[in-house]
Amino acid sequence: MQLDIIGDVHGCFDELLELLETLEYRQMNSLYSHPEGNKLVFVGDLTDRGPNSIAVIQLVYQLVIEQEIAYYVPGNHCNKLYRYFLGNRVQEKHGLETTIAEWKRLKEDQKKNIQEKFMTLYENAPLYLYFENLQLVVAHAGIKENLIGQMNSNTKTFVLYGDITGKTDHRGRPIRRDWAKHYKGNPWIVYGHTPVLEPRQINRTINIDTGCVFGNKLTAFQFPKQRIVSVSSKQAFQPDRFTDFTAD
Ligand SMILES: [Mn+2]
Image 1 (cartoon, protein in one colour):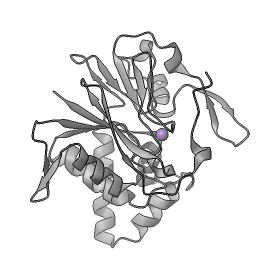
Image 2 (tube, helix red, strand yellow):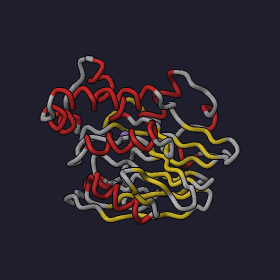
Image 3 (cartoon, protein in one colour):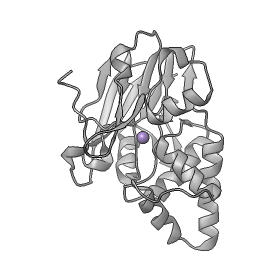
């Protein structure tokens, strides 16, 4: 089975459509298919900050739930939107405000429809995917070798937020440990969460969040082929949003 794993979309619907076309997915009578039967995997953070979060929710719901030609694992932004839809009190910032503004502009029946779709998508998603036969793990913020196979609260925090220290930097962004640098496991780990200008590959791990919403590009990693496919972003470029690992 060939998988096309897609990095953080963050509401960049046009770029997602372009990437699907580049990967040779075709749409007929609104249904998507791939000539070789490839399947998609979304690493999470579908919404927030970008221009078309609602359209991304609709498309991913169709691909995962209705057509069953895609897999999805949630990101921290997905988790927060889910808690918002549950009626929990969450802070409407860090991009969530754009998704909520889009959602509030919908008609009542559409609002209900999108809320139900997103909640169904989220509730049916595993915390992370482990394809044992392919020796592949897909987790939003990555995973440590000793957590693979586990589904507890430590695992949940790690796959949603990464190896956080509880501290923040001078810009107020969380400081995370570089777990990938020390990874020694056999399964490949494909993840996103931390925007980088180029996919960062180290020790059988690859970060494919190439910051589309920050004006760089949207990236897919084809597995087991290990081929990278990207399309350019249409968003404004924000260079200060990217982490530079080349100094390591
Ligand atoms: Mn994230």
